[in-house]
Image (cartoon, rainbow, N blue to C red; front, side, top):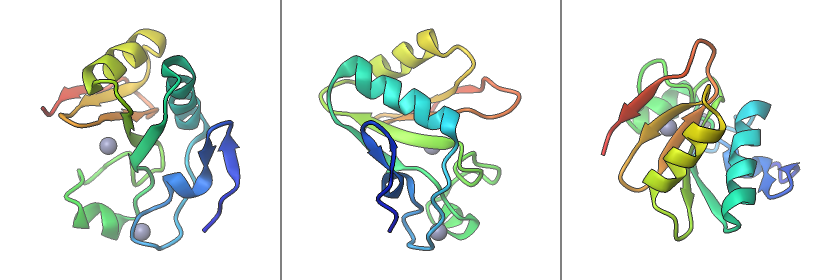
Length: 121
Ligand SMILES: [Zn+2]
Ligand SMILES: [Zn+2]
């Protein structure tokens, strides 16, 4: 487990694939957005899902061409802040970021050719 700090508040291990395969190479632009969220709201941000190897992505029912597999996505939950509020703040600050609304977290990625936006609540 690589506990190197990738930004002021996040460790590489927090973005690692949860199957234990060791895939943990997360895109710097995605880290930048997640750190900005942490800075703005000033409370802990949990990475529910970061990198996913193809096998783990299938296991959790991820989209076939999921940005998680390309290490450009993070599903984040901000303590005490609604996913809608998080979504709307990122959309305003990072118009080119791709965002998905979910009931308990916000998906953010920095794909090429974005932004994509969807509502899965
Ligand atoms: Zn994996
Ligand atoms: Zn996601």
